[in-house]
Image (cartoon, rainbow, N blue to C red; front, side):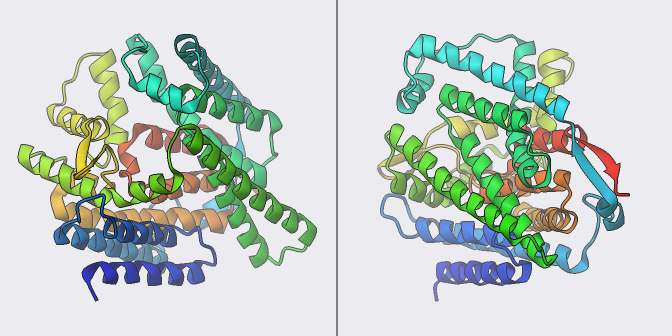
Length: 428
């Protein structure tokens, strides 16, 4: 067997074993292994891209193995360092702060509605393909001051990113607040139309599917007696899958993109992008020392001190941030006739920090965090833990794009859910 075949076989076997062990397909280990099994397969079975180097394949497989070991280590020893002890979590009830959530959701909705109006007035079309081309051109620019940029970076984007997960959990474990769900859907619609990005809508569907599968799993384990209600939720999940598929298909067609080619290239490109940008990091001798992977925590602090207070100049953080931004905006050649940007994968962030040691240790720690979050969610059915898990699983699902903890939107969304979106109460 070749190295690639060994890697694919390992991912497939581990994913199946994890599904059987955890009694659900949406456990982080299965999702992670299925994602990287697809990446290994597509990246080595295409003529449109250069074939990845053996060293790249080796380190991807090592990263997957390290993640697996970290996940197993955490699940086996149940080291409770992430979100507190079990007794406290089981006795807690997380109640959504609906008034606060409605206020923030309304502000975000109005913010994206303003952007939509500006785009329409300048571009004159609601066609996603045209909007995408228009936004990429030099014909449309928004002049914003530092305060407005700070509000967008520190509040609007993180809260808008957190709300779909909160709403998904509320459908199964909350009051099914119709106003919150309606405003969130409108917010996502305005955001999609103003940015030509449908990811927010798709994430809402994905989160509903995740929470629904956890609800069904836990209901079965507790000998759930109301079979009619359980069947209703199963039909709801089936409807969500159908609607999500239609939305994805329609929005993809409206952008003038071939669906199968789009999916296959997104999964095939990461190994080559990792190679290209790792070489760039080597050439400029850049070491992140943890800053690349954890930029999501550092960027808000950097932004406040650099752009608003203008009292701090962190040279290495700036260099790391600029390199991360460069991977998103600079188009490179992963193949002889194709250009691409982004999709450097989580392994590039870890590599930039501590080279190959970063991939090994970082993947292991990421596996422990994923396992802890999953176990907290399924064991407590606590809405806050479930919302956090939705975001953690999102980071696992999109690990082929980047290490999501390098994104301030992702990190601040988790902080918002953990400390502001819910209030504590205790079971009687």
